[in-house]
Image 1 (cartoon, rainbow, N blue to C red):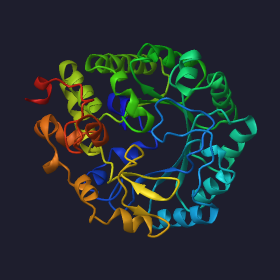
Image 2: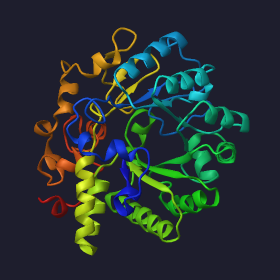
Image 3: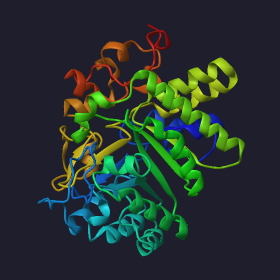
Amino acid sequence: MISVTKLLFNDEYFGDSLRYSHASRGAANGTTSGSGPVVVWNSTRTCNLKCIHCYMDSDAQKYQGEMNTAEAKRFIDDLAEFRVPVLLFSGGEPLIRPDFFELAEYTAERGIRPTLSTNGTLITREVARRIKEIGVGYVGISLDGLREVNDRFRGRAGAFQAAMAGIQNCVAVGQRVGLRFTINSHNLAELDNIFDFIEEEQIDRVCFYHLVYSGRGNQMVDEDVTPEQSRQAMETIIRRAVDFEKRGLKKEILTVDNHCDGAYIYLRALRENPAKAQAIKDLISMNGGNRSGIAFGEVDPLGYVHPDQFTQHITFGNVRERKFGDIWTDASHPIMAGLKNRKPLLKGRCAQCQYLDICNGNFRTRAEAVTGDFWESDPACYLTDEEIGL
């Protein structure tokens, strides 16, 4: 994640302590030395929607073999032992699990910050109240546009209105809530509308995701934004973030899954304010770029451990058989070993880029999806050859 608000204004939010600290840079197996990674748990593959870019290829059917409540609690115990700071409940749709509240509350009791990634359609006022009461730190609700645009992506008429109600219910009970928006060629024009929306609805946070070619998202490679459109999107995000700051509106604004965003913000500042640019570079150097397999990992509904939620085809072990910490620190798998020290393995533009230290090769799954080589250049990097020092 790249915190636009942190880089531009030095605003401080919860996740910044994990992303921007000297302790994070040298950590081999977690967010900081002595801590484990942030873990996404795709707790179920079942979902009440069928999004066209879903990396889990989820739908409304019941999937067999998913971890039960007792297994999930043992898994959470293992995460606590490994000092995992955050467990993100995702899916499918995690609120479909009847034991969600029990497990999220148990997570908080074990000293891990539970967060929730949801489509928002199942969040009634009572659900929102329970989410807040059990200590969920943050609820991220996926919207990929307003009204008809979102419904087309979500595969169901009325999905926007239902998600809107979920957002309003979170706001009403004081639950911290934000939007998750995946940028692509079909919704690029919605960016300004999304900023208007979060202001009108008093939403605290927005994460703009770059498309990763995984699951059903593999079918959208040709529908991703061009390099020029990526730059256009960043200009809109920066412009609106600056406008919020000038008007005293405190909104946390982040971009996700494309670490050249940090270099772009730095290069932009370098032209206008070199002193500020150096401060930005110091922060993104501490962040260390993409850290899948280091500070970020994923566990799927069956208990298999992956580098991140988009890399389901690479598995390091199963938490039903071994503790998560033992799996995460075992570098016998060549991909796990490579992710922890990837610079010598990277190829093409990534290997030659002058910002490799602050990007760390960006997203490997995108590179593999397009080239067939896990260590090739990430095709979503929109920096020019001149900008990266070629």
